[in-house]
Length: 182
Image (cartoon, rainbow, N blue to C red):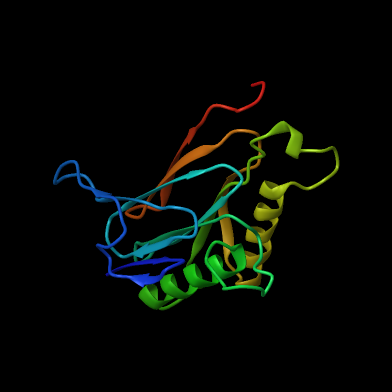
């Protein structure tokens, strides 16, 4: 069973996704856009590209169920429409959907990716920038759900392409070129 959740509400699993299956031996691949969450019990590779955004993966190693959410801003302020583009909404959705499939959040492991400062003029000494606030939100929210962060690759000044493998809970990270000086 597979679910995609995004700002447009729940969609059927085939709608709005870029799925690719290169060969029968390889897992299906799905690309997540900002504000989307993908949860599955199937052996998918979930791919997303991050700058200051954060992607959080959850994986149950006993049942091989997992998912990823990709959010842009740390916390919904209560104005306008709530959306998984905000960390507090996205992570709550991810936790709920993964536990719907696996039945128990006590086995879940989290991984956190992204939170880069992509532009030098956004980073001032001693001040938090959007990526660092997004990372802090992920830590706070996962701690509030009592979910351990098993691995993390965050902050810095380069974007990342992350591929999360639901079959074994691992992730591959490809670093993207810095937009300033490096």
